[in-house]
Amino acid sequence: MTVTYRQPGVVLTDRRFSVPLDHDDPAGERIELYAREVVPAARGGADLPWLVYLQGGPGFGATRFHGRESWLDRALRDFRVLLLDQRGTGSSTPANRQTLPLRGGPREQADYLAHFRADSIVRDCEAIRPEVTSGAPWTVLGQSFGGFCATHYLSAAPEGLAAALITGGLPALDGHADDVYRATYPRMARKTIAHYARYPQDIERARRVAAHLAEHEPVLNGGYRLTVPAFQSLGILLGTGDGSHRLHYLLEDAFVRTASGTALSDAFQENVQSVLSYAGNPLYALLHEAIYGQGERPTAWSAERVRAEFPQFDADKALAGDEPLLFTGEAVQRWMFDCDPALRPLRETADLLAERTDWPRLYDQDRLAANEVPAAASVYHDDMYVDAGHALRTARAIRGLRTWVTDEFEHDGLRVSGPRVLDRLLALARGEA
Image (tube, rainbow, N blue to C red; front, side, top):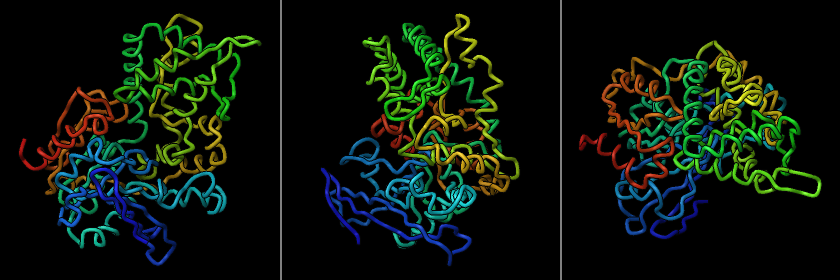
């Protein structure tokens, strides 16, 4: 049943669609997709072009806005917006530790999740587009992993697109996950050093926390096992505009004095678990390296293997000497499936995905070289999550794509910039800038 309701300045409509789990087997099992249609309250009956938003991730449902906040306000000046919960996320048919056992054992779960990458997401979009737009092409806005999906869209079904707008999400077209992480770890180190330059008091605070964890390895109040590498992975915060400040305030109140001695404060434990746990978006952990899989070479826990090539991240050496502890981020590693209670039941499934050797190719470089869809991308100059060098090489490979390279924002520029990032990309795609 279609449900329509209002928030300040907008009319919202819940949309649900049935699509094949495997688009190559349209008569087989089907799953449900959920999307939220948003239109300005004053233009509810207007014949507006459509913009479909593809959230970053993988594994995150579309942003739950309140009224016309953030970039949505700018989009609603020109478009009727569809906020799509990609398969397995949000209110679409869920895929998590509670539901995946319905598929069977780890092998069946891994085979099921192999259908949850960018190629299937784009085919979902093309399956529902005729119903949503009466067959007209639409504009796609892809943030981060959503930009990976948009790039695949340009490869696989450009006839469905009026324009492609990509924010912080131009993927390496033919690189292996190892190439991605060899480029990522140096950026993680730079972001950590920049954080310590801003907050020099955090050098000793981070060392103190790490030393405490090395001795005690506590289980947090919510069940997360906080090891030193897990603590280091709080560096995922450093890829966002306010992340350095958030990390600082976390470290500021890490300890409390108790009757039995110094302990990690409840507030610290609660906030750390909220950052590190993947209970709300397990597909991020399960599929994070799979989104780079192409061809016969397995990803094989790439981030964990490549980390060994960067000894400066070795916490034991840092604690034994006087070097600052380096944080990591945007890297899913196998030990996370031991630490996070939401991921523990899925360890074997994750191993099977890491071993997989039959990933389809995601990007048709010949087709991208002949692209005719108006396209624009923001590239954040020192983006911790997506390497700018890889992104610019891809930009040069897509005919007609225009880039805006900026130091003004981190990876979350679309979210924090109000109308500015989207406005700039629209102007570039339309030839107005």
